[in-house]
Amino acid sequence: MISLRDVSKRYGLLRVLDGVSLDVERGEVVCLIGPSGSGKSTLLQCVNGLEAIDGGSIAVDGEAVHGRGTNINRLRQKLGIVFQQYNTFPHLTALENVALALRVVKRMPRRDAEAAAARQLAYVGLDGKADQYPSRLSGGQQQRVAIARALAMQPHYMLFDEVTSALDPELVGEVLQSLRKLRADGMAMLIVTHEMAFAREIGDRVAFFQEGKLVEVGPASQVLDAPRDGRTAKFLGRAAQ
Image 1: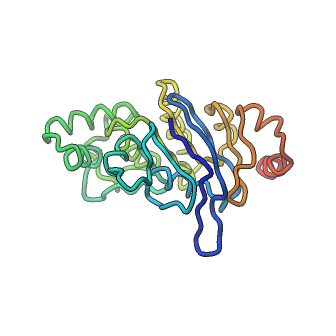
Image 2: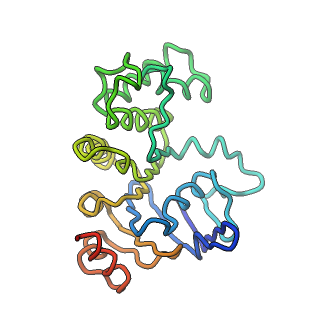
């Protein structure tokens, strides 16, 4: 389980997260929605230990992410994270991009790392692109390389931060299809998204954030179709326009 309890985060006087409590169970998909600047992306970075917190606690499988004695590099191997930007290395092929962390972090022999990387590229539908450099790949393909790279570490949970927002509309579907496959295979995921139809389709629960607060969380159909909080309803009305 990923467990957040009364988490707060500030940048100067700006309170980015304000007393957020949320759990993500193994095998569960929780979609985070809300206006830009509401704290969703910051929450993912705090879960992964990329950002410190100012109050509360975050635990992954019972281990405190920000604990003084926590080996954060070891803990992060349970948490795959994919950002808006693909962050692929331009001088490495797709296969080499995916295999790199396996060789450096897990110290796998090159042959084993590349075999594992090839399996993950095939999983996201890129088995024919292993020898291509990022400059020869579309944005959607590069994003799928980033997903394969995260999956190669065999994480328990996947964190996705607006992974389709930098893509042309015609490329969004191929990335969402990879997430659908992960959903079908039981991967626990925390997904920041503006794709409401996708959140309804893939999410077990949807959490609505505004101004750093977790305003409402519940089953996807309930939050998206019959929100209980007026702020959620107002946001969804604007999103539908």
